Length: 288
Length: 337
Image 1 (cartoon, one colour):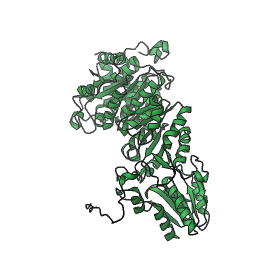
Image 2 (spheres, chains in turn cyan, green):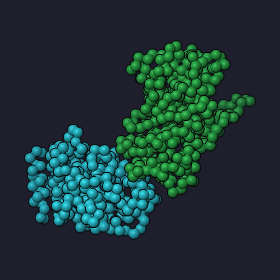
Image 3 (cartoon, helix red, strand yellow):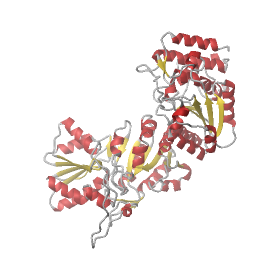
Image 4 (cartoon, helix red, strand yellow):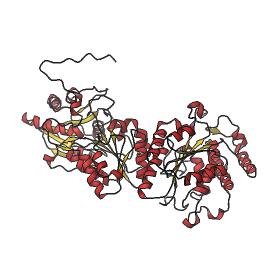
C-alpha cells in the first residue's frame, strides 16, 4: 500500500478513490491517448488497467514528485508497446501531467509509443525488444539486495514473450539467486502479433512450468480487482526465498464491449467516431 | 562446401596442435604475466566497492576467477546464458554498481548483441564487457573466432571499444575503464599474457593513439595483438634497414583520428593498418574513411583477416595462413615497399 507515513500517497486529492475508480481513469487516459494516434495497443491497455491500478494504487511504494526516489519499488515494463497503459497509470498517479497525454507518440514527445528509459520520468527501462525485462529485473533485484534495500522489483511482460529463450534464462536465474524481491506479472491475453499466443507457440501448462522452475506462482483473473489485489498481497508476504509470478488472465479490450468483441485486436484500428463511443462505454460500465 | 581431405604429415616435421596455445598465446620464451585482467580488477575493486564481477560460465577462461576468489560475495555466476548475463548487468548498473561482465567475444558480439544494444548501450549503463578470444585467438574455428567483434561494437552508439595489446596494457586499461562512466567493450588476452610494451615505457590513455616506436619508411597503425606483431616485425625489418614506425590505437572507439591523421600526413611513408579482425568494419575501414574525408592520401595497405569463415587448427599455422604472423607481416611490407 502506498503509505502516507512514507510521504508517497499518490495524487492526494483523490486519495479516497477506489481501485475501480483508478482502473476507470487509467482506461480513460489510455483511450484518450489512443485517439491521438487513431490506432494502437488500446486493447492491451484496457486489459491490463486493473493490474496497473493495483500496482500503482495498492501495492507499490513511490513518490509521484520524485520518480527516482531511492526507496521506491521499481516497475519495469518489458513489453514496451504497453507504454500507453503505463503512461495512463502514471498520469493517474501524478507522476506525469495529464495534459501530456495529448502528445502520445508525437514528434519530440516524452511519451513514445514504445516505452524507453531516457524519455519518460518513472520509466525504469527501455522495453520493446521483447524478452529483456525479466533479465534487467534480475539484475535490479541483485543490486537492491547488495544495497540492503527492502524495495520490490515489479516487472510486467506479455504471454508472447514466453516464446523468447531469454525469459527462461531469467526465470532460471531468478530462482537460482533466490530473488524474493521480484514480483513478475505476465499478461495472458492470449494474443500476439501473429494470432492467439497458445497457437503461435503453446506455453501451457504455465503454472506447472513456473512452479517446476522454483517460483511461487498464482494464477488469477487479471480483470478481477479483488483477486489481483489479493495476489499482490500474497506475493509480497510469501515467506519462501523464491521469486514470485502472478499469471494474470485478462480480456483484451476490457471495459469497451465493441473492442472486446474484435477479433484482430493486437494492433487495433478504431474509427474516428468510435473514440467517443469507447469513452461512453467506459463511463457506462463504471457502476456495473 | 567440399569435405576436407585427410591431414598429411611431413616426415621430420612435428604436427602443430590446436590445444597448444589455449592457455596462452605467448610464443615460446616470450615473457608473460599471469591473468593480468583478474589481478588488475582485484586491485581496482579494493578501492571501489561498486565494482562487481559477472560471468556466463567462463570465469576461469576469462581470468575472472581471480576476482571471484578474492571477492566471492561480489561475484555473480549467471550460468551459460549470455542474454541474462548482460540484461542483469544492466539492472545492477541501474542500481549504481559497476559490473565487469565476461564471456567470449563471439557470445557477447553475436549471441547477446541485442541485449547489449538495448539494455546497456541504449540505456547508457555503466557496464564493462570484457571478452576473451577476440579476432583470431582460438583454433576452434568460427564458433570461437570473433573476427567481427570490433565492427559490431563500433556500430553501437554510446559504446567505447578497447583492443589492448599485452599484459601491461590490460593492467593499465582496467582502472581506466572502471573510472570511465558508460558502457565499454574490451577485448581480453587471458592466461599467461605476453609482455611487449614494457620495454617502450608505454602508458595506456583511454582515447589516445600513441607512437610506440618511430621509423622513416613505414607507418603501421595497429591495435591489440597486431601491435605486438608489428613491433616484432619492425625489429626484424630494421635488420634490412627498413624503418617501421608503430602507432598503437588501443581505443578503437572513439578513435584518435587527429593523431592518426597527423602521423599519416608525414610524407613518404607507406601506411599499413594491421588488425586482428576481419577486413570489414574494423580499424582499417575507420582509418581509410577518415583519410578520405580529410584529403590524406598516403600509399595505403591493410593487414586483416579475410572475409571468410576461418579454419580450425594451431594458431601459429592460422596466423601464418591469414597473413598476421610476424613473418607474414615482414614479407608483406617488403613486397609493398
